[in-house]
Image 1 (cartoon, one colour):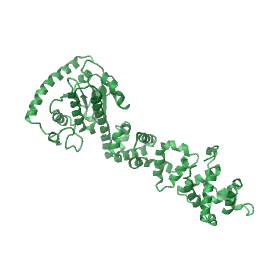
Image 2 (image 1 turned 45 degrees about the horizontal axis):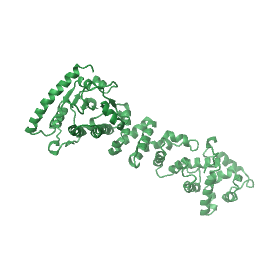
Image 3 (image 1 turned 60 degrees about the vertical axis):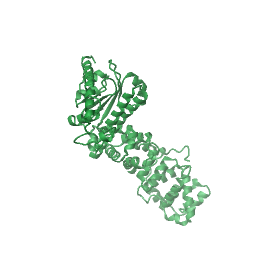
Length: 480
């Protein structure tokens, strides 16, 4: 173990090629100092470490040939002993460590290969194997040093900026200590198992501290290579990307493929938040079987449009808020719904970007889907900080759609033909519908219901229209 008083910050940084010492050694008379490996070995054997001069240390560190004077096994043992001695000798430790770093960085003439080989054995010893500087040196000597560096900072839960102060007082400033950051994203996507929330937060801290060009390259890599299953489990990653890249100047520096993947990820997380909300309401709120069945159908229907959801906002009546708010993530946009005398309902607002907004009323007599075109004022109301109520939203207008029989067929048609809101690319059958009614054609939409269903739908629709017209009239007359 390094001596407890061992403070390497006290040292000035020496030249990795101490030419002055070598020149001094060359001027010495042979009688003054014995520059031989055997003499050094003898002093170490006799525990006369203090008698070893700096020139002798430099001589044995610099010269490969002098080591040939002793047998191979003795060379191996001597190098190990020198490394162990360095644990109690500040100058020796500092010199060996820095020279070894330069060696691994390509300057092969700064330290003998025998001491390099000795380091590889010594670095596994109990006394130093957990030392961060030693770990870094081992990484520098690996076949893929940049990848090895990333593994270390990941294991240590350090970012690039957090690592440097811990090693700068010992190791030289090598270019690899900057270049390896571009290996963080590949390591995260291909080698890190298992991915946990701690590791996701580590990745985001690394992103935050990268230079912009490195960050953009890393984000590009993550978007194009990270498994969607991981994205779904850790919305924190997508929310960071949404905050830093969606509608940002940096987004334009991503490839079109990466931008599309970002949109899909954002939509997937937003849909998952909606789906989780439906599950929570069904499990925790005392709703009727009919209401639960209706919510499950909406959950399935909107899964077909998940890629379009740029953000969502959740509005909960007081009772629901008190029951399920603690089950929602802290970073979700959740507000209490202002009471205005309307039927109890949860509301979910979807932002579809240039395609406008969709508002889902989960329960109550209206229980409608309300569609709004893109409009700055509508957006400021729906996604602003002011409290919202059921009547306030209905007062905004928009187009209400029912949830009567065969509503999925009718709603898909309305979204596609009037608002150009299309299902996810590649959709051939609708989630949540049986095969007979779920087959999807990009030009024709969903199959038409039979005449009997259409007649029944018309009957239900007439009743619903009377209800929704009355509710909209009440909203217009209200002060909300």
